[in-house]
Amino acid sequence: MGAFLIYQIGIMFDEKQKQKLRKDNTKYIYQLYKIELEMNKKHINDLMQIKRVPYFKLKTITRDKLWGELADYSKDIRLMNKLNGVYGEFELINNKIDLMIAARLANMEKSKIDKSNELEGEILEQLEGVIDLGKGVLSLIDECLGILDTAIKN
Image (cartoon, rainbow, N blue to C red; front, side):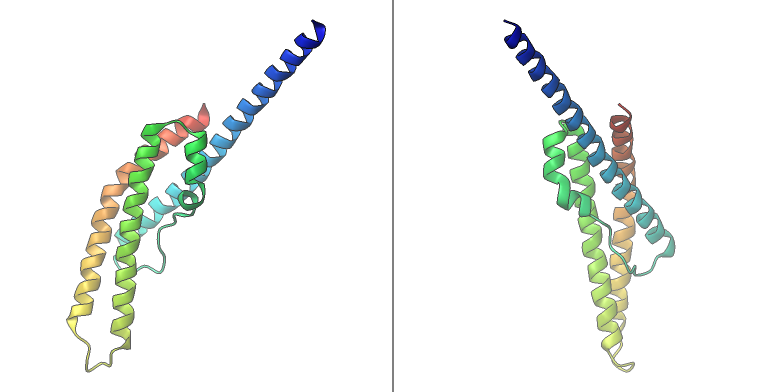
């Protein structure tokens, strides 16, 4: 009987250790998402102010590397849904940045005689799209950051 009791206590202790490790891992993943979202928020604000072709794209490394782990550790469907929306918008913004860079490079390759306004127009159109998408995603980023802050504190 004593051995069984010790065994049960050991199982309970192991389970508590696993729960603590799971909670710590979840907070760590949340912190990584928070860092990436804050950095992208700053980049979006910079893009909206400078209004020129950026030399950077929004980062999606955390989502690319840790989406499965987030799904394993977090059971917050609301957060997952909002993050999915935010990163979808990041991809659209990055696609527009790619188009701007390609148009800028194509325009640079043309001789001064051959330069047309088509490529400049394309750059401006994509830049307007980036700014519009950026304005729309900022509130989603703030919602995600609010959820992450609350989850990290608990």
